[in-house]
Length: 115
Length: 115
Image 1: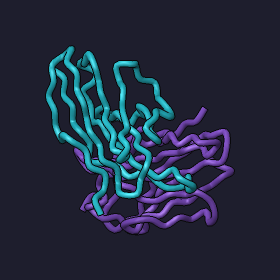
Image 2: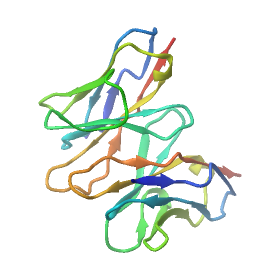
Image 3: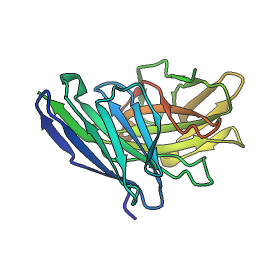
Image 4: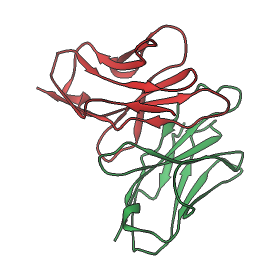
């Protein structure tokens, strides 16, 4: 049973460019959350997708957008990249369904470096 | 507002000694509490959770945590530390009101176990 998978593992982009990060949730999970983790910091919640809709959003600008597909996989898009967007981007999946108690499982993350 | 505090940036213990990593929280409703561990350049791994029931929760790798409602704390403990336990530990809380599934994270505590 595959866990949460993210791609790519590492990425280098130039300021002003756009980037797309991908996430496949753990089998049986229907909810995907994205987090940004700067060096030495805890994860910061970006947004969460369920049933192909953004359900909750953290304090991130509109440059950060996402999508969830019918197979529950998800993409995180960041436009007009800034140097400050350099971070580890983590995807977490969980199951909403009728059980709201389940813990989230995390992927290994995508290390984005903006130069 | 929901918040999580990990008052210690760094905890150092000798191998074989007991360890404690502290966490306090603030939520408006009943909390769901989680501990995760993160190794360098890796995603977060779930250790244990408190949802309801017994205040002492046992998790992976010999870790346990005690929920204390009056002190709003959820400290992580292990009776005998291993060098391989050296990592970054994060406490997270979720207010279970409504469909809120956003995890609020502490800033992390770096645990060093000395041989």
